[in-house]
Image 1: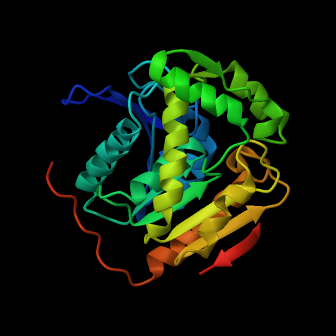
Image 2: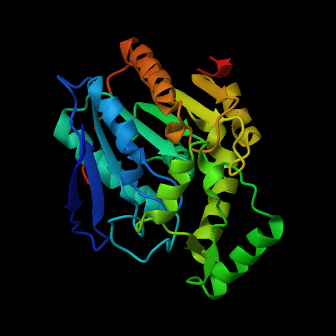
Amino acid sequence: MTSTTELVHRSDDAPDLFVRHWASAGQPWANVLIVHGLAEHGGRYERTGAILASVGLEVEAVDLRGAGGSGGPRAYVERWDDYLDDVEARVRAIRAATGYRPFVLLGHSLGGLVALDYATSSRPAPDLLILSSPALGSTIPGWKRTVAGLLGRIVPATRLSNALKGDQLSRDPAVGVAYFADPLVETSSTARLGAEGFAAQARVAAKGRTLRIPALVTQGGLDTIVPPASSEWLAGLPNVRRIVYPELRHETLNEPEGPAVVADMIGWLREQVGRERPAPVPPDPGTGVDSADN
């Protein structure tokens, strides 16, 4: 099952958004919106999207502004809330088109940071949240954070290397080869994006404990990009389950065991959707190791 694509034009002068759709097999029982990680795009989720769709989920992946097929300067964001605007635009569109069936926001890495920030904001909320290796911390040296902050204010378009290696992503060498051969993958980011991302990490760490939406957090135990310890505090929140896969790296979904990780996500979603929950509020106009199972 392959995706179809669409470039969504916006009337508010915001950049156009490139989206991928995976149609559900049979009557859909929930919608899933995937938000990708730093410098990548939704096309890297073909396997994940197809597996989710095969069990009756209607799936979309959005390329955030400045990434993949979407408009805007590459790997750049003027203000962090622009990313939340992009997510909100898709949340509203999907909600309006699907009669408010259960809605799931799934964010990976930087997309996980965006998703958690969004879910703890006052914007139209998802019903369920999945955070895959959420970028709540990083192994980036402190000096580089300081430099990004300074350059982000003075010369925001300055490019800084992402300094990623293929074997940090997955134990499957083909994943790293495909990543660096992908013309839509950025190997550097702007200083402004770095500065905004670091500031968002601090804000989300302060407000993230207000999360009330049921959430699943998945993390590779051998992740050298996002320290596994950075998401440990989420396990102590009500309605949050955190699963650590001890031998997996940053992109658990792209590991050889990726389908099993997706199966864990599907099992959790079935459990949550099967529970009696309040009806979602329409927007206003305009295997692993469980470290917690609350």
